[in-house]
Image (tube, rainbow over all chains, first blue to last red; front, side, top):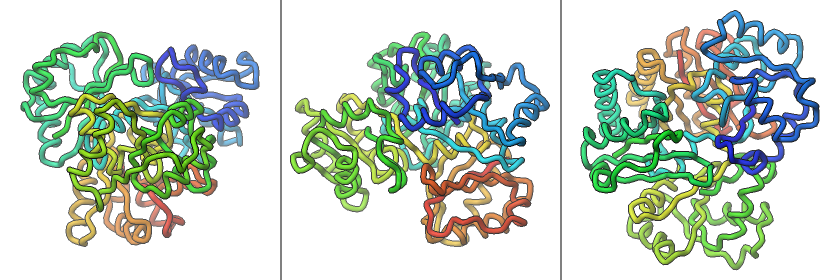
Length: 231
Length: 231
């Protein structure tokens, strides 16, 4: 499980430990979320082998069927190793990478995670929200009624279980979601807004809903953003 | 927020990116979970300043009151920077570090997370459990009845919300917890057992409860272990 940088501006070896290089240099088979960005990452990383000699297969929930995933694993049953690379950050979390890992476990193939940047984890580290109990729930529903209900449920869980609730949105809808949150959440709840983690203009800010109402909309327009709700 | 290695055997710069060094070199004030292990970490890392010239304060939920935390933040309000270091892995997650971060946000102090190893995140990457929705709930209750109820609730949430449930135990009770899980969980549930993440004898194994019953107790006796429950 090979992490890659989150932000385009990140230089590869600024956010990845040198030890990852040994693993990356040794592999010639990669299961990736997006072939083009995986090639670009490996090339920027300056791995030992020429990129043209490497084999890539794409694991993407829009294009890959369960039998395709079985096929991808086959070389591993014959003793080959594979690197799994996500579009950004760590594979297997908030991406389709977990499908191949589940299959690997079913067949007794060893899975080794490497250290790298995860925006979810880094936001939790820097949010001041409850790091003893937290939940990542992915995207909220798009339809307005479902979305309101989902936000009420997150708020209830944050209050009753003191569990921080982490969620994300498609970047072009960030502003709308923020406005809805600030309008409907109870004023004392703490809301973290975090954008462009690891990039030079990284934003991580935790305020109460009441304080956000005064502070106004932060600069999250079309920026990859993570929200954390807590008491 | 300065991560450190998880396993004693890890060489520092094998699991941390080189860019962290610049930040660590620049700081002379550290808020740490344990002074002794923080000193050892910085010394192994070979930072620029002599360790004896650095200032350390201990933030530990057993020894630190809210007014102590206020005092720790004071230098930051006067323009100084602080590094936050946990006993192992990333600070702010499953440790008391979040207290100082919450206060920093309240006073408008900028918080910057660095990349490093988190056993919770790395287990999620390599478990094959649902990386689109997962929850870390910390330690289970110790009393038997409360514990059974907690496990039933985790199982229900995993089933109804397809949310992976991550939890930990004091190492000397790992075996007992494992046996209780395997005896009481429904046979089709998937259970990940992960121990000594990043160490040479790292174990990460996901099997159904049914399969675990046949496979028997894995080698988790007194090893730091993370459990993940999913469907």
